[in-house]
Length: 146
Image (cartoon, rainbow, N blue to C red; front, side):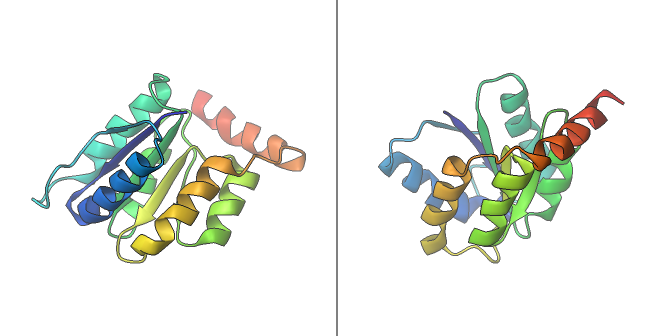
């Protein structure tokens, strides 16, 4: 398992907090930027992180911006990516179990540092339930071929 993560200027502080958590848990990761609070464009970082997943450099992606929405839109434009904005434990657990997301998009405006550990744990440990959900995810994946 390896995480690729990225953030724009609005998500920089939360990304730094996530970096410390990943280091403390000895979880391998690569940081695709940004590396400051200077204004920048979120698509640049979403592309880098998703390319890491496409090229199998990473198994999971985490993207952070103010709302998570911009990152989510960009990520879901890329083949093989299933991203979701995660606002709480419920959305995280169900997005993994039912949609088999491989990219978690966090909203820096709504995600508290004390919630990061639980969200990270759920994202990395919740298994895809398959069953009826596999049929649906297969249909989503088929969209990449059109």
